[in-house]
Each structure stands twice: as structure tokens, then as C-alpha cells.
Image 1 (cartoon, rainbow, N blue to C red):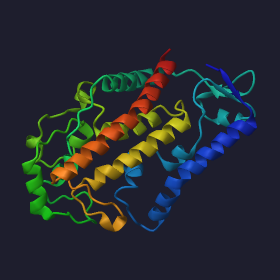
Image 2: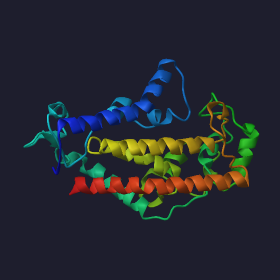
Image 3: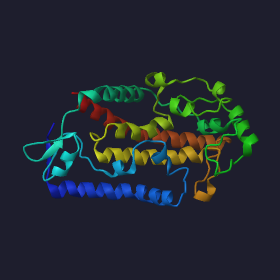
Image 4: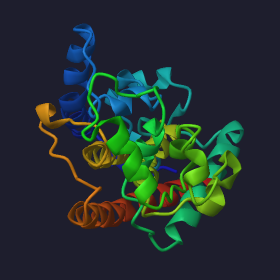
Length: 283
């Protein structure tokens, strides 16, 4: 797999730049955690997803790269000695099935035309006719009755199982489809905000074979998508500086579609990079 040789000064500079980039996100989160504070937007990627901050901070070059003077990387079983230093070894057979699944899902998603117009109603459907409010520290902009009325007035079109599974019991029958875990390969589509956020999940699931630059790019995309996700939600996050996207109005729905389409476009090259990485690992 080797093809690029990085001397110690070069790879250490890349590592340090990655750490500095990621600490812009991890340090504030750790400070909030030490104070017992929760942020409904910025903390999501550290609570919903399972990749620990320490793992996000760790730099990996990706396949096909040799590092000189990098014996410290031999502490991780994925690495091996080479003629000039250290590099990632071949994908273990035990991980092949997982990589094949990720490749199949991302390839299927990339092949479809983005479907827009869900208007972020998944967050509304999670609290529809329910006393279980996921972000109990933040009030509903329209109140309980107003929130329920919005869900009842608009078509609910969620195709992403990991959003649909959090719907309230009353909201699930309102959804146009009833996605199940096994439906991901047939239902995932590139206009979905959660499909865009999940690129971060698939990137870290390929750790340590994912170049850290790709993982960080996917994390940054997911964080920006999460901002729209919560701005379009029923919660009032104005005190945190998040102006609402008022999807209960025609103007708000048009704004949501524009931002949703932009994120779909932004996700395309990252999805392509992940697909190419999977193909490198599988061949």
C-alpha cells in the first residue's frame, strides 16, 4: 500500500495542524462538561456518535503513506514496519464485512437524486403529543399545541431510520414511510441531513484507515448540518445565537430547502472520498 513517504518533520507538522484544528471543537466541549453544562447543538457529535474526543484528536495518515521515525505508531496493531519507517498494514479480514457494508451504503446513497422538502420535521415529530422532550432545558418556540399543529399541517417524509426511531409513538403513523434498520441500503438518500451527518460516523468507523483530514472534514460538515437541524427544530435556541428557520412558514420552508440543498452538494465530495477509501481497503 505504500506510495508516499513523509519524513518526521512533515508528518509531525500535519499531526500538529490536525490537533489544533480539532481542539477548536473538543476543548470547549470538555470545558462545558467540567462545568456540568450541555449544549444542544455543539455537544451532539460527542454524545450521539461514539467516537471519543481523544480518538478524534489522534492523527492518522491513511493508507499508502510511510512515516519515518514514527515507531510510536507501532503501538497500534494496524501499523507495521516498512523499509523506510512505519505504515498502515492491510485491512484485517475481520473488518472486511464492515467496510463492504459502508461501501455499499455510500455507493447506493450517492447514486440517488437528492430529495428535499422534509423541512426537518423529525425533531418536531420526536415531541409530537408527547411529554418526553429531548432538550428539556430549552422551550418550544410555539408551545406544545403549536408544535403539534405544525406536525399535523405538513407532510412527514423521514427516510432515515436513526431519526425515525426517535419519533413519538403518536408521530410514527404520520410518516409517509416506516423505515427499518434493514432498509438503509434502499432508502438512504443524499438530500437527508442525517445521511450527511453520518458521513462522520462512517469516516470514524474506518479508523485508523481514514486519513484524519477526511475525518475532520466530515466532522465539520456534520457540525454545520447539526446547526441547521436545530435551527429548524421546534426549540427556541435564540439565547445561544441560533436564529430559527421557521419551517411553519412558506419563507422558512424555502430557506430550509436552500440550505438542505447546499449541504447535499457539500457532502458529495466527502462521500466520494469515503467510497474511494473503501475501495482502496477492499482491493
